[in-house]
Image (tube, rainbow over all chains, first blue to last red; front, side):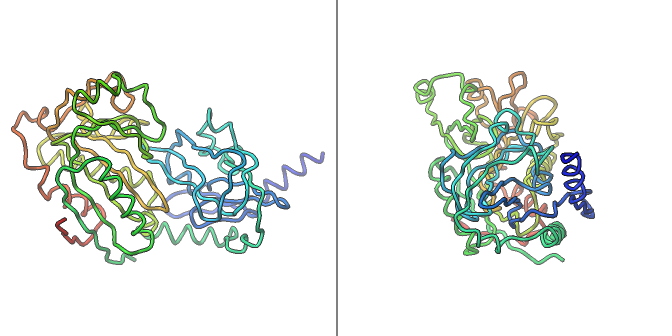
Amino acid sequence: MASRLLWASRAASYLRISVFHRGFSSVIKDLKYADSHEWVKVDGNSATIGITDHAQDHLGDVVYVELPEVGVTVKQDASFGAVESVKATSDVNSPVSGKVVEVNEELSSSPALVNSSPYEDGWIIKVEMDNAGELKKLMDADQYTKFCEEEDSKH
Amino acid sequence: MKVPRSLQIWRLGIVNYSDALKLQEKLVSDRKIHKISDTLLSLQHPPTYTLGKRRTDHNLLISEAELKKLGAELHYTQRGGDITFHGPHQAILYPIISLRDIGLGARNYVEKLESTMIEIASLYGVKACPGQKGETGIWVGDRKIGAIGVRIQYGITSHGLAFNIDPDLNYFKHIVPCGIADKDVTSLRRETGNGIYEAVEKPAPHVTYSKEHQCHQVFHLF
């Protein structure tokens, strides 16, 4: 019963918006977003990080994910790894500073999870934050949605 | 709303791979802090084999020692894509541009690189097209004439495209080009049977590229 309620509330928190020439790019309500299109889910001092639906759509099919080692330090706005798609490697930046405590090993054998499940199974790293105040620099779902619309209208 | 942007084009002649890499790294840093505008490098390399971030060196069919005997170098890079060969009479374009400023993603950018090469090929009467899914690059039938490998940092591109005008195609025999085993490599020369072109130094690729981005051109002789 409890897990069904949890599923229902998670489903209800999905905010789907329509980006005019791109079709659907979903944005999740309770996450925070960086302007380089990474999301972060905060749970106490723990941060789970991945790339957004908008990002995976603009990248194309991901064929390789370069993961950092557990234990390395990451800094807000600095690159910690990369994804490869359509012969392009794109850096992935960390929205927060801290220490990497876990990486999603599944991505080594199934990099396409980044495309099919960018907010769930396609998560990339988990970080122990060293400065929760940095979260203030990030966007919320509404701000990020608007940011994407503005960026897409540039061309 | 389109703000006029400028593109600086540097025509460099033949440049060692390491030197071109160092130059690109500097330009990416400068572009990041808005010290320079979007920049396009047009050049050729001496015989050079390169690998991408995935380090797919199982696609190199000879040892590094044998490769050096051929007069070639080997470089491991951070770009996307598999193994490839660069050499004289292969036109290389390395655009250092801010995709973020124009709201372009990797996929659209690579598609524009592909259509640039397709347009160049058609200027010489060669009908080329993009590859099938997962085979980025451009093809004439099942022969590859243009390759792409890109790196994007801070939303800024480096590396780019390599278009076979008339390189020595024998060098490709020592690799599985781009990791695709059963397809040939070709060149503008092979497809048209004509002599060696000055096309490598002609402005045509730059004009085509600029049209794709609706930029105002600024030529800068390096």
